[in-house]
Image 1 (spheres, helix red, strand yellow):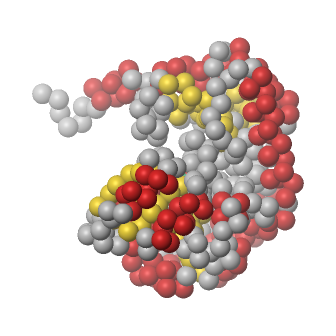
Image 2: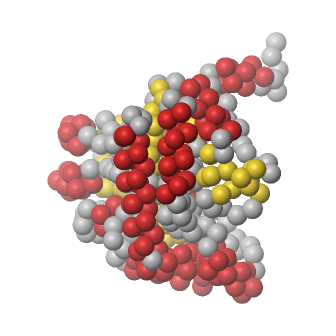
Amino acid sequence: MAGFYDFSGELGRLEQQGLYRRRRVVDGPQGVLLNVDGRRMVNFCSNDYLGLAADPRLVDAFQRGAERYGVGSGSAHLICGHSAAHHALEDALAEFTSRRRALLFSTGYMANVGTISALLGRGDTVLEDRLNHASLLDGGLLAGARFRRYHHADPADLAAKLATGSGKVLVVSDGVFSMDGDLAPLPALAALAGRHDAGLLIDDAHGFGVLGARGGGIVEHFGLSAEQVPILIGTLGKAFGTFGAFVAGSDDLIELLIQKARSYVFTTAMPPAVAEATRTALRIVRDETWRRERLRELIARFRQGAEQLGLPLMASETAIQPLPTGDSERAVALSNALAERGFWVGAIRPPTVPAGTARLRVTLTALHDDAQIDALLEALSELGA
Ligand SMILES: *Cc1c(COP(=O)(O)O)cnc(C)c1O
């Protein structure tokens, strides 16, 4: 009889299916070049799209924040952990997103789970794109509402499902899809939600800071108003280079979340120094437009080069450039072979993506140089990716 603590069978199965996950230990700051086990690797897997995670100005703001506020926040926001640093960042994020209020969460996962489950309950309906991030799916399941997925980025299928929703209905989508890099058809989603009196929640984890002339994300990219996308979630650990997340919207939305979002109420506030570093990041994201322009150039270079080499691109115009491999073992083998050549590219497998759609996920940042892109393309081509 296998005892409760005998996990070897399950681990063996994961290994056999190419689904085993391993961590590499990085020494030193995030950046284009990473120190891994005493070797340099060119980083093509982080979400630090604008290259801010180790920016000296962020480090300085973080250090000054730690001097002023200490390290720990001491408690949840509703006890005594809500500092002037948190409050100032919320105000800045509200202004940046042209919304009345913003509410900080400790992570994007918690923002999504907490917001969806605060807004819906039994008898309500949540409609989710089938490729939504795990945290959005988990939030929908946790809410106890009727949970339905619509076909990926398919307004017609969403319309059909909206017609049969019961109770309050909330439409939920990634802005930029995290493993595919394509955009949600946001104007159509907004129009449909409006027409059916449904709520609309957009998680712009990979668009915020990157898309739009000012970095306002997918909402700015499509030129939509705050009224058309009433519940906007952004994360701060990706293009902003720090940590945490926020929900932006109306006064009443934010007040409701303060009362009812359990992942807000029952967790320790992020360290205030992180909020201070993030306010500096926000200024840089807004002002240093060259970072977004450079990223766009690199994306174009990667796609052009890949096309010339006959590599299998997906329909993405963003910094997320996946190369489908189909099966998981092949994704892992390619990722390992790239690592031997000094390139770190993630192998993305189920359950992160649907079965049979494993892929290499190449991500680009504003700080890559042309030669690094070209060298990666050459390696991918030689390995027959
Ligand atoms: C990364 C990610 C999150 C989670 O954000 P964290 O701050 O890392 O918890 C949520 N949604 C999407 C689409 C993401 O890619």
